Image (cartoon, rainbow, N blue to C red; front, top):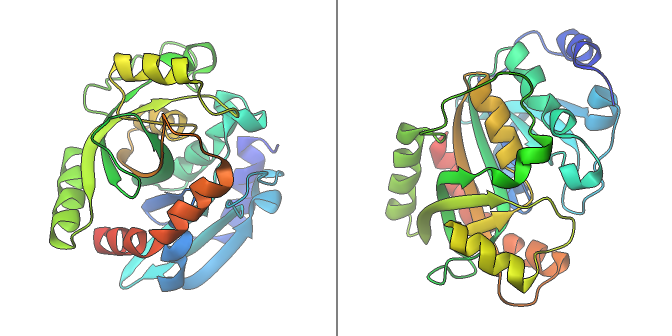
Length: 256
Protein backbone atom coordinates (compact mmCIF):
# COMPACT_ATOMS: atom_id res chain seq x y z
CA UNK A 1 0.00 0.00 0.00
CA UNK A 2 1.23 3.48 -0.85
CA UNK A 3 1.84 6.09 1.81
CA UNK A 4 -0.40 9.10 2.29
CA UNK A 5 2.21 11.35 0.67
CA UNK A 6 2.62 9.03 -2.34
CA UNK A 7 -1.14 8.87 -2.93
CA UNK A 8 -1.40 12.64 -2.45
CA UNK A 9 1.16 13.24 -5.20
CA UNK A 10 -0.67 10.92 -7.63
CA UNK A 11 -4.07 12.45 -6.89
CA UNK A 12 -2.80 16.05 -7.11
CA UNK A 13 -1.30 15.33 -10.54
CA UNK A 14 -4.62 14.01 -11.85
CA UNK A 15 -7.21 16.29 -10.23
CA UNK A 16 -6.77 20.03 -9.77
CA UNK A 17 -9.82 20.42 -7.51
CA UNK A 18 -11.32 17.67 -5.35
CA UNK A 19 -15.10 17.76 -4.66
CA UNK A 20 -16.30 18.65 -1.18
CA UNK A 21 -18.59 15.58 -1.02
CA UNK A 22 -17.49 11.94 -1.08
CA UNK A 23 -19.85 8.96 -1.25
CA UNK A 24 -18.53 5.53 -0.31
CA UNK A 25 -20.58 3.09 -2.37
CA UNK A 26 -20.97 -0.15 -0.44
CA UNK A 27 -22.38 -3.46 -1.65
CA UNK A 28 -25.26 -2.83 -4.05
CA UNK A 29 -25.11 0.97 -3.95
CA UNK A 30 -23.26 1.47 -7.26
CA UNK A 31 -26.34 2.29 -9.34
CA UNK A 32 -25.75 5.97 -8.61
CA UNK A 33 -22.93 5.74 -11.15
CA UNK A 34 -25.59 5.39 -13.88
CA UNK A 35 -26.43 9.05 -13.23
CA UNK A 36 -22.93 10.46 -13.08
CA UNK A 37 -21.34 12.51 -15.82
CA UNK A 38 -17.83 11.09 -15.63
CA UNK A 39 -14.90 13.45 -15.27
CA UNK A 40 -12.14 11.18 -13.99
CA UNK A 41 -11.71 7.63 -12.74
CA UNK A 42 -8.66 6.25 -10.99
CA UNK A 43 -8.19 2.63 -9.95
CA UNK A 44 -7.25 1.84 -6.37
CA UNK A 45 -4.28 -0.04 -7.78
CA UNK A 46 -2.95 3.19 -9.27
CA UNK A 47 -3.91 5.50 -6.40
CA UNK A 48 -3.26 3.29 -3.37
CA UNK A 49 -1.22 0.39 -4.74
CA UNK A 50 -3.85 -2.21 -3.86
CA UNK A 51 -6.88 -3.94 -5.33
CA UNK A 52 -10.17 -4.75 -3.60
CA UNK A 53 -10.77 -8.43 -2.98
CA UNK A 54 -14.47 -8.39 -2.20
CA UNK A 55 -17.16 -9.30 -4.80
CA UNK A 56 -19.31 -6.24 -5.55
CA UNK A 57 -16.49 -3.76 -4.87
CA UNK A 58 -14.85 -2.64 -8.13
CA UNK A 59 -12.09 -0.55 -6.55
CA UNK A 60 -12.16 2.85 -8.24
CA UNK A 61 -12.27 6.51 -7.31
CA UNK A 62 -14.72 8.28 -9.61
CA UNK A 63 -15.06 12.05 -9.96
CA UNK A 64 -18.04 13.50 -11.80
CA UNK A 65 -21.30 15.41 -11.70
CA UNK A 66 -24.82 14.29 -10.82
CA UNK A 67 -27.21 17.02 -11.95
CA UNK A 68 -25.36 20.14 -10.97
CA UNK A 69 -23.49 18.58 -8.01
CA UNK A 70 -19.84 17.66 -8.43
CA UNK A 71 -18.99 14.66 -6.26
CA UNK A 72 -16.40 11.96 -5.65
CA UNK A 73 -17.40 8.30 -5.31
CA UNK A 74 -15.44 5.41 -3.90
CA UNK A 75 -16.72 2.35 -5.74
CA UNK A 76 -15.82 -0.11 -3.02
CA UNK A 77 -13.84 0.32 0.17
CA UNK A 78 -11.02 -1.23 2.20
CA UNK A 79 -12.15 -3.63 4.92
CA UNK A 80 -10.05 -4.52 7.92
CA UNK A 81 -10.95 -8.19 7.41
CA UNK A 82 -8.96 -8.03 4.16
CA UNK A 83 -5.86 -7.65 6.30
CA UNK A 84 -5.61 -3.86 6.60
CA UNK A 85 -4.99 -2.10 9.87
CA UNK A 86 -7.44 0.53 11.06
CA UNK A 87 -5.06 3.22 9.84
CA UNK A 88 -4.61 1.60 6.40
CA UNK A 89 -8.34 1.02 5.94
CA UNK A 90 -9.03 4.73 6.46
CA UNK A 91 -6.20 6.06 4.27
CA UNK A 92 -8.72 7.30 1.64
CA UNK A 93 -10.48 9.47 4.22
CA UNK A 94 -7.24 11.11 5.31
CA UNK A 95 -6.11 11.56 1.70
CA UNK A 96 -9.34 13.13 0.46
CA UNK A 97 -9.59 15.42 3.48
CA UNK A 98 -6.10 16.66 2.65
CA UNK A 99 -7.30 17.71 -0.82
CA UNK A 100 -10.57 19.38 0.22
CA UNK A 101 -13.19 16.87 1.39
CA UNK A 102 -15.85 18.42 3.67
CA UNK A 103 -18.75 15.94 3.75
CA UNK A 104 -18.99 12.16 3.64
CA UNK A 105 -21.91 9.83 2.88
CA UNK A 106 -21.06 6.25 3.75
CA UNK A 107 -23.26 3.39 2.54
CA UNK A 108 -23.23 -0.32 3.31
CA UNK A 109 -25.13 -3.56 3.38
CA UNK A 110 -25.93 -4.80 6.86
CA UNK A 111 -27.62 -7.51 8.88
CA UNK A 112 -30.75 -6.63 10.81
CA UNK A 113 -30.56 -7.33 14.55
CA UNK A 114 -33.64 -5.38 15.56
CA UNK A 115 -36.69 -7.66 15.38
CA UNK A 116 -38.73 -4.84 13.81
CA UNK A 117 -36.39 -4.61 10.80
CA UNK A 118 -37.06 -6.50 7.55
CA UNK A 119 -34.94 -7.38 4.55
CA UNK A 120 -35.34 -4.43 2.17
CA UNK A 121 -35.40 -1.74 4.87
CA UNK A 122 -33.06 1.23 4.74
CA UNK A 123 -31.40 2.45 7.92
CA UNK A 124 -30.42 6.07 8.48
CA UNK A 125 -27.74 5.72 11.12
CA UNK A 126 -28.27 7.70 14.29
CA UNK A 127 -25.40 6.21 16.28
CA UNK A 128 -22.78 3.48 16.21
CA UNK A 129 -21.05 1.11 18.61
CA UNK A 130 -17.25 1.29 18.45
CA UNK A 131 -16.35 -1.12 21.26
CA UNK A 132 -15.11 -3.88 18.94
CA UNK A 133 -12.57 -1.53 17.35
CA UNK A 134 -10.68 -1.19 20.62
CA UNK A 135 -7.63 -3.19 19.54
CA UNK A 136 -7.26 -1.53 16.14
CA UNK A 137 -8.88 1.89 16.27
CA UNK A 138 -7.93 4.00 13.20
CA UNK A 139 -7.23 6.92 15.56
CA UNK A 140 -3.83 6.96 17.23
CA UNK A 141 -2.59 9.10 20.10
CA UNK A 142 -4.68 11.45 22.28
CA UNK A 143 -7.45 12.07 19.72
CA UNK A 144 -10.25 12.44 22.23
CA UNK A 145 -12.89 13.47 19.72
CA UNK A 146 -16.49 14.24 20.61
CA UNK A 147 -18.78 11.59 19.13
CA UNK A 148 -21.90 12.48 21.08
CA UNK A 149 -23.54 13.22 17.71
CA UNK A 150 -21.38 11.28 15.29
CA UNK A 151 -23.79 11.49 12.34
CA UNK A 152 -24.76 14.96 11.13
CA UNK A 153 -28.30 15.84 12.24
CA UNK A 154 -29.21 18.03 9.25
CA UNK A 155 -28.05 15.38 6.77
CA UNK A 156 -30.05 12.77 8.68
CA UNK A 157 -33.20 14.93 8.58
CA UNK A 158 -32.86 15.34 4.82
CA UNK A 159 -32.47 11.58 4.35
CA UNK A 160 -35.59 10.94 6.45
CA UNK A 161 -37.57 13.46 4.39
CA UNK A 162 -36.48 11.83 1.13
CA UNK A 163 -37.46 8.37 2.36
CA UNK A 164 -40.88 9.60 3.50
CA UNK A 165 -41.57 11.45 0.25
CA UNK A 166 -40.51 8.52 -1.94
CA UNK A 167 -42.09 5.66 0.03
CA UNK A 168 -38.72 4.16 0.85
CA UNK A 169 -39.01 1.85 3.90
CA UNK A 170 -36.62 3.06 6.57
CA UNK A 171 -35.64 3.16 10.23
CA UNK A 172 -33.24 5.24 12.24
CA UNK A 173 -30.90 3.03 14.20
CA UNK A 174 -27.49 2.13 15.59
CA UNK A 175 -24.80 0.25 13.66
CA UNK A 176 -22.28 -2.02 15.35
CA UNK A 177 -18.95 -2.87 13.76
CA UNK A 178 -17.99 -6.54 13.47
CA UNK A 179 -14.51 -7.33 12.15
CA UNK A 180 -15.33 -10.46 10.13
CA UNK A 181 -14.73 -11.96 7.60
CA UNK A 182 -16.93 -14.65 9.14
CA UNK A 183 -20.54 -13.75 9.72
CA UNK A 184 -21.56 -13.48 13.38
CA UNK A 185 -22.47 -16.56 15.38
CA UNK A 186 -25.94 -16.71 16.92
CA UNK A 187 -24.37 -15.94 20.31
CA UNK A 188 -22.52 -12.97 18.79
CA UNK A 189 -25.78 -11.62 17.43
CA UNK A 190 -27.57 -11.97 20.74
CA UNK A 191 -24.74 -10.15 22.50
CA UNK A 192 -24.65 -7.34 19.90
CA UNK A 193 -28.42 -6.86 20.14
CA UNK A 194 -28.15 -6.76 23.94
CA UNK A 195 -25.55 -3.96 23.57
CA UNK A 196 -28.14 -1.85 21.72
CA UNK A 197 -27.26 -2.42 18.06
CA UNK A 198 -30.02 -2.41 15.46
CA UNK A 199 -27.83 -3.52 12.57
CA UNK A 200 -24.40 -5.10 12.20
CA UNK A 201 -21.78 -4.85 9.47
CA UNK A 202 -18.06 -5.02 8.68
CA UNK A 203 -17.40 -1.42 7.61
CA UNK A 204 -18.64 2.14 8.18
CA UNK A 205 -17.37 2.62 11.75
CA UNK A 206 -13.62 2.96 10.96
CA UNK A 207 -14.24 5.49 8.17
CA UNK A 208 -16.72 7.44 10.25
CA UNK A 209 -14.35 7.74 13.20
CA UNK A 210 -11.52 8.88 10.95
CA UNK A 211 -13.75 11.43 9.24
CA UNK A 212 -15.09 12.87 12.48
CA UNK A 213 -11.56 13.20 13.85
CA UNK A 214 -10.77 15.33 10.78
CA UNK A 215 -13.87 17.51 11.15
CA UNK A 216 -15.82 15.94 8.29
CA UNK A 217 -19.64 15.85 8.51
CA UNK A 218 -20.92 12.29 8.02
CA UNK A 219 -24.21 10.71 6.97
CA UNK A 220 -24.40 6.95 7.45
CA UNK A 221 -26.79 4.85 5.35
CA UNK A 222 -27.23 1.09 5.51
CA UNK A 223 -29.50 -1.39 3.76
CA UNK A 224 -30.77 -4.55 5.43
CA UNK A 225 -29.84 -7.40 3.11
CA UNK A 226 -30.38 -10.20 5.62
CA UNK A 227 -31.84 -10.85 9.04
CA UNK A 228 -29.02 -11.64 11.39
CA UNK A 229 -30.75 -14.61 13.02
CA UNK A 230 -31.42 -16.32 9.68
CA UNK A 231 -28.79 -18.25 7.72
CA UNK A 232 -27.25 -16.23 4.88
CA UNK A 233 -24.22 -15.92 2.61
CA UNK A 234 -22.48 -13.16 0.65
CA UNK A 235 -24.20 -14.03 -2.66
CA UNK A 236 -27.59 -13.58 -1.00
CA UNK A 237 -26.43 -10.26 0.48
CA UNK A 238 -25.47 -8.99 -2.99
CA UNK A 239 -28.71 -10.29 -4.53
CA UNK A 240 -30.90 -8.47 -2.00
CA UNK A 241 -28.89 -5.27 -2.44
CA UNK A 242 -29.26 -5.53 -6.21
CA UNK A 243 -33.05 -5.79 -5.89
CA UNK A 244 -33.15 -2.45 -4.07
CA UNK A 245 -30.56 -0.66 -6.20
CA UNK A 246 -33.23 1.54 -7.77
CA UNK A 247 -34.33 2.88 -4.38
CA UNK A 248 -30.69 3.33 -3.39
CA UNK A 249 -30.18 5.47 -6.48
CA UNK A 250 -33.27 7.56 -5.70
CA UNK A 251 -32.14 8.20 -2.14
CA UNK A 252 -28.59 9.21 -3.09
CA UNK A 253 -29.68 11.30 -6.08
CA UNK A 254 -32.13 13.29 -3.96
CA UNK A 255 -29.51 13.81 -1.26
CA UNK A 256 -27.39 15.56 -3.88
